[in-house]
Image (cartoon, rainbow, N blue to C red):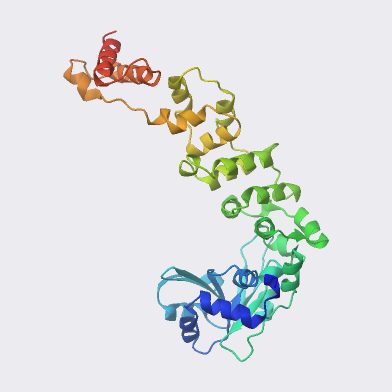
Length: 372
């Protein structure tokens, strides 16, 4: 049976099995109508198991959250709250309508019923709910999200969606890459009209970092370009693929922040990476000198651009240190000052290049350099 054809009672059973906090939620609701909503329902229909909970409350979500206990973070302006119960994160929001004073502005919210709440959401696949604790446990799906999920369709709910909140277009690329969805013609036309210039740089960057955190980030980045949402630099799609491949294995996965490296690809902010990729260091010490000062993300970008020499730098040369230090030179009669630092640097260069080995040889080389 395909996961999206699972009967509602089977989905509810999966929810109860995966989320033992449901009984606490029902008690905290204190009679208020409450719904599992959005991505939680979508993922359950797809058979994805345990998930963070997204709960809509027909009433005061903050009060329900406070009765749950646990670590609470409230967002009064948007009538939402987040509760951490052990390992479980529960996001609660009062059912509401939203209005926007200008394109890209943060919404003004007011209480509303569950149907109006669903109508304000981004895509049909995120606008389904499962009622909790009531007599009717059937899936509420007024916008056809279940059939769109089955057909692999990304469909926007209303034609001002990307005008009101352009970050929804960025989220659309995330969902399309993650679930293999294709926008229907109307949604595609609206996506291509998205103007990210109406939102702040911080909101844009925050949403792009959520996109680069996706396992299928390089595919999502490609969609940003093909949909015309972001004007990607030339070669960005292929570079994103190479960065993702590079970051999947040792030692690169432990070296840098993959999400920020991919964000740099989107923004074309490669820093010294192209110059590092073009360099051909003749020795280990030259490679260390070239790489010094570059951030881990810039090193990843340079390697993805073809700097093969960085493999040796990352696995070996960057870890080479002297067995001696400034105190050893002072003890040997070298005065403190620039000459001491230069002497230590010269000894390290010779050690990197295999000219010396061992503490005595290092000290001899440093003293010779210091004394000129």
